[in-house]
Image: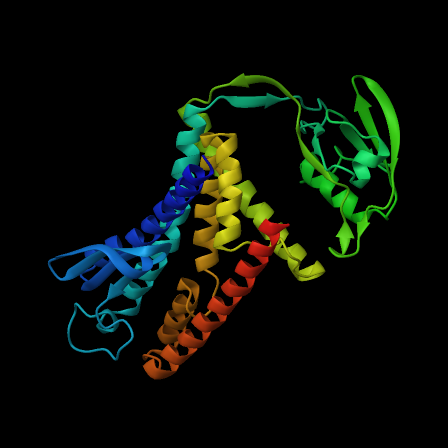
Length: 359
């Protein structure tokens, strides 16, 4: 069955990449650009055909894709079908279309999911409306497990600070922040089946990670299930996407402050491994991961780094400000260097992914 789950995970990744490239392709066609090739995957073509001016191909390695525009990396000519012969605003829309399509796809998937699945109703604090942060899992031999904490414990305080009293912050985020701000030793005040208990956690600081890690997974106490109507699913999908963006920004911020450690970033191998594990737990969970990946793919490509869509958008903004095209040779060299750096990063991350799998 593992092979089936791996195959399913690869199909989901291919699906997300297909829609990214389809965004570029659709807007390009609508604006009159000549498209020479549309490919999903890299390497030799497994299947291909040509229709009109465009060759469509499915390639052997299901990682990535491309939408090849005529004259994309060349000097502009007096031909409205060629990429660089078109005005900046048209090229900007074509490049922006890929990431935007992934973001819209994430919202649509979240909306459909919330319409179709039962939504948990959590126990909340009457005063703040916060979900009670409940321990769902404990890492074996972790600081929390060794201290005597149990699954089902509701964490009300860390030291003397409530997890429910923070402004503009949900209780689960507050708990994570309080653990990070505490020393290597901290006291959890928990509600265990109606009984208040104070439990001291020691040795929380993890030197290799450079931060406190107590070894808990936090969720909420589910008291019921319900179904969203169309309006609730619509607003809920945007709220869910907003939460993912917020958590992603917080994770990136943590990398800048604490450094990047093994496991913080995953490549294709690590991503497929995670998706395979999630798929074993249920296809609904795999859809949740697909939503996160689609959103991440869109946001990542907007980073203003050479070889990414965001880098090309930055070049177009500079061209619009200057009022004349940039030197194509210089632009191509910068993009080539950016691509090499990205490939090197992917290689390093993949090595760490494989090491992680063996561990």
